[in-house]
Image (cartoon, rainbow, N blue to C red; front, side, top):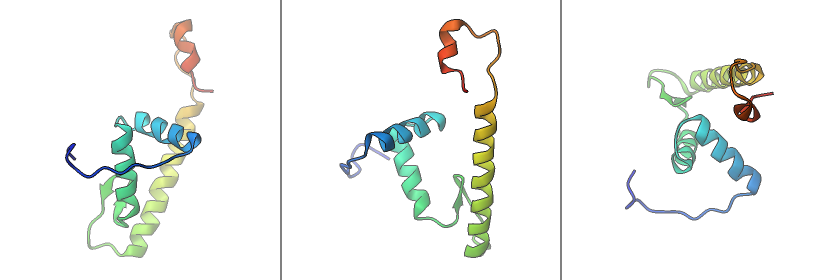
Length: 99
């Protein structure tokens, strides 16, 4: 995507903007790239967790796999979020420690 591509101005609630910003950070991409990726995925039934499925799979199978992958991703996020950081992290870093 280049800077010459069309632009679109969108209004978001503070909560949604914060969620998109956090998701972008987690996915190591810009807020713009996060929004574009999520929009593209919403229009593509064969895209699961950022990976294109084979054209030989039926839409029903794709939907089933997408549901399963998203459930695993959610479980992993919950698991990772519940883990404590190593004790050798300094006190200044402890504010970012997951709860």
